[in-house]
Image 1 (cartoon, helix red, strand yellow):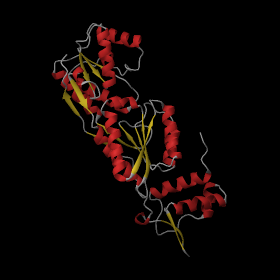
Image 2: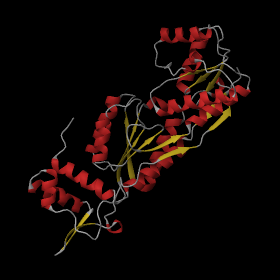
Image 3: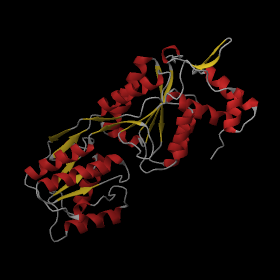
Image 4: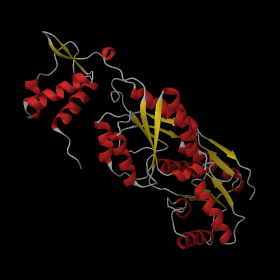
Length: 357
């Protein structure tokens, strides 16, 4: 982990206190000597930290009076323009609607507001995501829109984004361990609606099959699914509701898992797939097992609609629009981290699809 220079650490500490309203605009700010005593640094380090805060517009110097915190309305407001980084966790999603709509909408908003969109693909790799985050910082981007990989990895890179005061908004899912803005679909309601529709179609044994399992969107969908089962008085069977990866498995283990599920004493009457990629794989595997007639449902609409009886519709474009608006408000603010992080939840739809199984 790289060492942060002392003057940068002092700037960050003082900026956080300014953003939190810790200083009166009418009272002189801390002096060089006070900075030296408080942080145990040299005069040169203290002067650099204070000069940088003045250059950033957070402090103002008044001749004969001293240094003061700039009043919010007089702080330098950043101008529009520059680059915004969009980091996604796999471009394979372009085969469907969700990621494609996010990309198209984000680029359209950037073009309309005078920004350039810089796209990076983490390819579902935490290491590549970290590299993309640090590259974006090195390139001086104005903000970052992040569709994160699953898990809670490389918190240092995200901490560095905040230290450099670069606004960041997560989309589709968020990191519970990192306080950032996020715009997500109402995943719990999505799974609840789909499960309810399947129950109304006469299904009492619904098996869920997943791709990723360590992200908030999936955990919330499982929660909504289980809630719907409970509301209808159906048993919560671990073999049907377990949060387990399906699509990432290799061929033989995957077929063995599905075969075991279908050969159980009370097998599922419908398979509820996490997304269109899981759906496509399940359909192929059912054909290989001689069970192409089993009913399928999907939690998004990125797969072929003729395969499913019911499917979810993710508000991808609306999520991207709201995420970009939130990011741009942070970018053009003189205090991008002053306000608490916001989580925006966008409504979803569940509908009958064209598939007849």
